[in-house]
Length: 457
Image 1 (cartoon, rainbow, N blue to C red):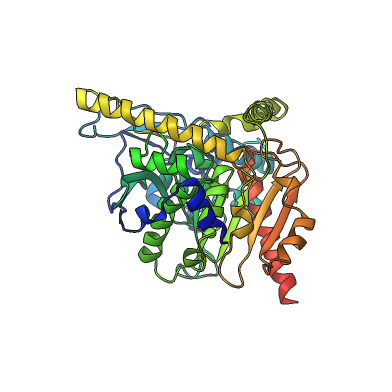
Image 2 (tube, helix red, strand yellow):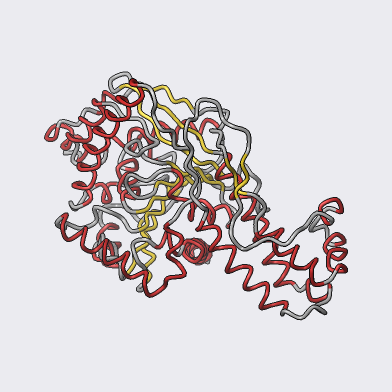
């Protein structure tokens, strides 16, 4: 018997309730009352101005900066700036989080620039034009452009299901500013889903690094988050499913809409932790999976059976391990939110109801991540594509390395699938997407490129 059909009959999940849907992806993004100001690019150039005016002329000559801008550089601190803009109608309270992840990233680039240039005032334009320095400046400029998009391109997506009602999630859209060999319509669009309950803003590390490596990306938050939209019927379907099929139905509808928005563009699904399990559920639907060219599943939740207490203990231990690499800890803080405080009686009551539903769903989702889920075994992508399992030898939160390894790849091949590829990092941890994204993403992409080259030969 088909696994999904068995789950429907035993557990009561009713896929038919999700059959008809209307997806709304707003053309106009959300408005915020604050935005990040100039970043590292201007900071580094301003430092150069202080050292030698001739350097600015050199930068103008190289086309790195406009003449009009050259006169306006000023010394800025390494810490990110926030610029207040006009008040946004209907917002009573706005909470702004410092973009610490980006600040941390910029600080490391800034230190590298200083190390390459030296502190002496007589540093000349020739040294500023050193390829390594120019590369660092180019990277910082791209990061500034990406950071701006992550704030200005946030949207609240809603999906109206005939049998469920309106459910929604926040999306962050970033088109990579990096020039690639591939044309826009030929390079992949990555749909990224993070760990459970995450907001669109709490996946920012990956939202910076994927575009910095030439990939266009849409990051999706959860309906069971503060920025999401839930209904009682959706919560019931989560409770009645064996895995995360209800979430999968929501995201499948969203992905299909983005495929219509960017026709012909290859679609890849990337997920971390619970996001990986949701994607496995999505890819277990053969009517959908053929539209996906590739999947990357990182720190996959639901890989192994474990008690909720054990999972919680290991997660706390993982956070505690950051004490040994404290420079990475700021990446747990995220940029930007527009968080409205409900004022009217109706708004307060709606917020209470959402919180009740959110807690119901959270409890069920966590329970699913503590079970060994079969969706990974039935997940498929389009013919010729691969499912990459990125495992970490120190990821005790999921212990996915015990399930996804070279032996399991061989076992999976016996089922007629040759799509599994395991990328294992013996020092990898569960939260590397948040704390080590600048290292993790290039590692994954380089491993994928090597596999493609090996297959060609």
